[in-house]
Length: 333
Image (cartoon, rainbow, N blue to C red; front, side, top):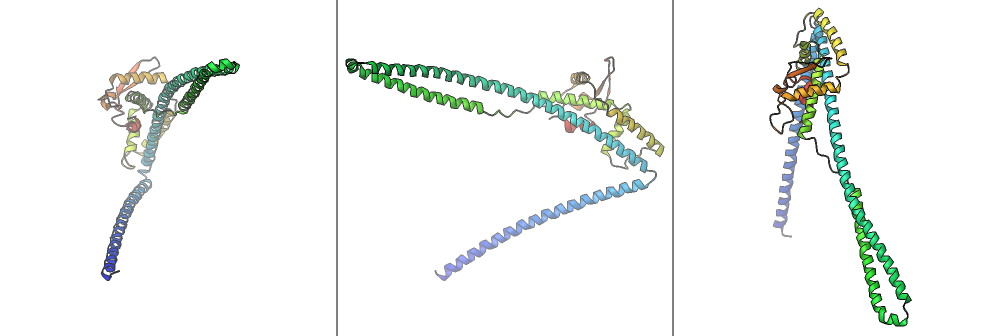
């Protein structure tokens, strides 16, 4: 090999090795940059948590604030309890509706599959009847050919043989058709059900109205609407941002929270009451467009309560607009 050719190949190899090293270095630099960014973010997050803990520690050490801290977290706990109950109700309702729709689709699909299988089974039955007739005719034709004497066989034997061949051919064809139909029937029987479509807009609207009705039930369990607002406020602000008053005021508020927690643990309203509330909410609900499943907040800002006599009382309460119990997170969209 000429020296200049060998030298050129060596330079070419060195060039590509250098290019590959540069690419590897660039990738490593990008990875180092990514990890450095993650470390800085984690350090910032840790610093914020440390700051919050220091702030909480200072509040707990302050005699004027320690009672406020206890009230704050009791309020936040009550809000979390309301959120969990609403989320559980919404999820159960959605699952029930999806299961109902799934069962409906499955029943329709099974009925259709049974009808298709029935048609094929009927055709198989007809073919088997025809096959039996052909086989009986073949047996009879063979017997007639065997019963022919010499003269009859001489004049009619050739035609009889052709008739036998024709019958045998029909039998083979019919048997093939039967096998094809049996394979088609097996395919139908092994067919897997189709994927069930998701909830349509009408179903989502129905679920959301029921969830709104249940949210109003939770809201109505608060005898004092101001207390409900305080519970919600505690979930939105940080500890120390709200002053609930003197130690005596805090003690009174804590006693109210105990009573309120007991009220919250009572069984939910009867399904009939929830349905009546849904009907009242639906009278005013406006979804804005045919594709929307969540009503506009201002159109469902009335809370409906029913007394033992069935009389309805209404009051203002924009639970959706103010996102009570994290309504916006549990509604179906």
